Image 1 (spheres, rainbow, N blue to C red):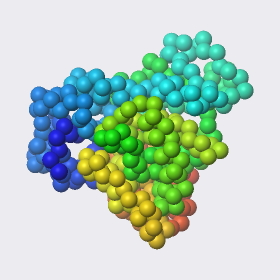
Image 2 (tube, rainbow, N blue to C red; image 1 turned 90 degrees about the vertical axis):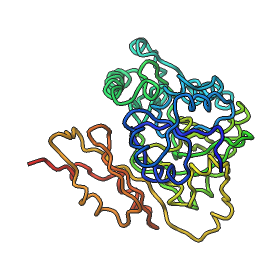
Image 3 (cartoon, helix red, strand yellow; image 1 turned 60 degrees about the horizontal axis):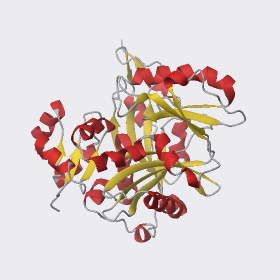
Image 4 (cartoon, rainbow, N blue to C red; image 1 turned 30 degrees about the vertical axis):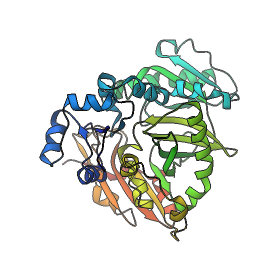
Length: 389
């Protein structure tokens, strides 16, 4: 396919090897800057000029995908107003949920500015959760109930956001405004999908994001299977069609996180112009043979009826290696060999900079026994800590 008005924006924070191979294979139009631009060119990947990127981004019919939300600054500088409007519709957690609240009238939601933390009137008798209105990877997320617990956690929220503000720019993590919402019990799901050129939502993958308990907010394990897709596809599609009825959006990828309570979909957050971060998007390929990037840019729709007929009882998982507590990358390392030996099968292993992020690797694995995958929720990652001699 000749990609007219298509653009991949890249930032050097993280590019999975699968995405890298996909870029080289398909010759998607790419824009990047700095050392990453030089690396792309050395790998034989053409990089557009600022003028060429701006021309694509000025079109209301452009297809845009980025690997990291740091690229939002490029769109703010070069993108068209319609694209920015669609990004803001999803990116601001409070604004997004407020726009669809007519379907969730029973659901408490409030926006709290950083300077109003001390004066925030906490509703009693409700389980609540706070998160940055613009945030990423569980940073600044805490659960609480009542004013007493609020007073215990509010300073931790601000200090954690401040700590990671040097890693992510304000388009990715912003500690000025926070969303406080009612905590929804139920199964948490992640969904990669896109709106096609007709505004129809196309689901590319659904995965379960399990936790140890109700206070766990870590992004450790995501898994999917044909059985899970069959169970949740219908209700997720119904919710996405509701979103499509609220706002006409075209040629637009989204990573969505929801909770299912009493068979109703409650949105947690929606991340625009990308699929699952740090390689989670590749799970659809390992599980179902679906290259999400190619499906988006080529406007392809998975034949779920055929895929789900296959007799495959495996669960496929994306597992994040949690960085040990108080890990010091200048004095310590990770025993990668020992960690890898905990898996029955590794489909792909990627090392992550543990000095920069809250984790040291990502793994794609599979098993017919779900316990082989969910055991990482209970694993003591500190045992993989190695002190330099």
